[in-house]
Image (cartoon, rainbow, N blue to C red):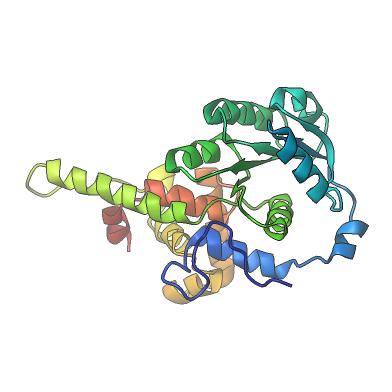
Length: 273
C-alpha cells in the first residue's frame, strides 16, 4: 500500500517545501485513513455525479469509480444535466467535474450549487494548475482541485478526505500566494512616504495572539508546537484556532492557511510577534 501521494508534483517529505500546509495536511490525513478495498465495499455508497465533456474520458472515470463507494449515480457531459439532482433536498452528494473548459462559468455554477446545498462536495479536475484559476475555484467553494494526471489511488483518497471536510488544493499555491503577498508588500514599501507609519490592525478583527497563531497554521505547526512556542496549553490553542476559523469563515486549518497567505503581510506578522 502506498505511503505517499504525488498530489501536485510536490517533492516527497524531507524536501525543502515539505512544510507546505496543504501537502503536509494531506499526507497526515491520508496516512490516518487507509481503507482497504473491502472496507470501501462495505461502506454505504456515496451519491456521486460525474461531469466530463469527453465521452471516452467520462466512461473511463465511470469504470474506475464503479468498484468504489463513489460509483457514479449519473455521468453527463455538462453540469446542467445533473445539477437538479444535487440540489438542496438531496443531502450529501459528490460532484466530480472537469474544469478545463469554461473555468469561470463552472466556478459560478459551483458557487450557486454550494449555496443551494452546503452538503454538496465539488471536486474539480484540470489539466494544469493556474494560480488565478485555483484562487477562483477556492473562492467559489470547491472542495478539491486535482490534476487529471493523478493516480486512481490518489483520486479515491482525495474523495475520502473531502468527505471528512478537508479542502484538497495544490500545496504549491501557498508558495505562490506568499510570493504574491511579498511583491505587494514590497510595492507598498517602495511607494510609502518616509517617516514613521502607523501599523494596520490585524485583519478580520483578529487579536494579536490569534494573528500569530494563524501565521503558525500557515507554517503547518501542530497545536502541540504552537502551545510550546507561546507557553500555553493545547486546549487554549484549540480555543484560539476555533475563534480564528469563525472570524475568517474558514472550514479548516488548510483553508485558514491559504487565507492567511494572501491576507497577512510580512510586516504585520513581525509586529504581532
